[in-house]
Image (cartoon, rainbow, N blue to C red):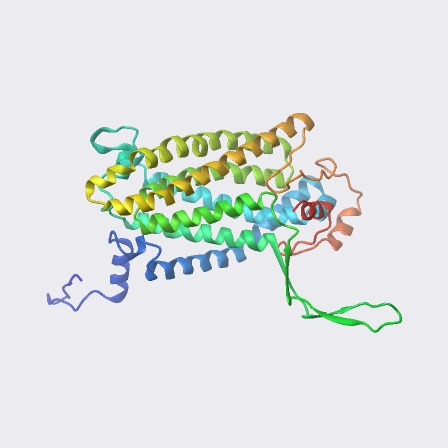
Length: 395
């Protein structure tokens, strides 16, 4: 620890605890924070997850109320009452849009001059710098906190997916079985906890759950093996393409057809450029064809042979999932061309129930009547329409 001079020119004791923690966290490279499997990083990671969930508990109702106001002005109170579930999800995707936009701006700024994003291969630049010098790459504080925040967000996203997809009901372990009139009723044992599909389950739950599991394994594995340079590239192509995804979902939740189409076409273009071009043909190709350069720096061959397949398989799975989602996008586009209807197949496996026209004509007394019966809380939406029951049957 550095010593400082007091006003009389005498050396003080050591740095204060707060100064030492700040220096360690934000000014020192290659600390324990760069490996999410260390106790220090794991504690901070859990703390960030709890912070994210606390923030969402405050801002999601506010964002949902904004969606409610816009929906009421655009479609009327009858549409609002019939689409409580959409309004609740609107708040979630506003939060996602803010996060993906903010983290993308930070990543572009922070990685702008990093050698591994360079298109030139001179002096070890380009994707060669992902492996040359490995495993002695320094993990700067900006990279360490970038990984911590991304890890916390992705863990929270997996938890949120489980909460939205399953319903848990507690019941008595002894159930009464009805018997004929001449016989006495009997009892039988049943599990005290009953778990089933929720009405808010996504149509692509299986794909999304696999994606979350693979992503979190890659985050933990790449931080443990100090492959943060590759991990940061994978993060950026995902976050950049998620921005138009969030915009298109927000527009579709409000049933703004032409805005949805514009955001959707932008999403398809960005998806092609990032997840189906940069990820497989730049990042994954470098992993497959250039990772052997790490052996030149003294990486033990046995570690290279055993650990490389872990990353080969998981990154390959991500690419296959992106292809599957792109096929889904083509189905959505085909449906729009044929029927002139926007169906989000990722939310509704067999398409969405169309609630009439975009604008519902109401009588002068309808707003007050509908407002009296509408559910006020966006966090506990009341399922009033048939769309939720169709989703439940599909899954």
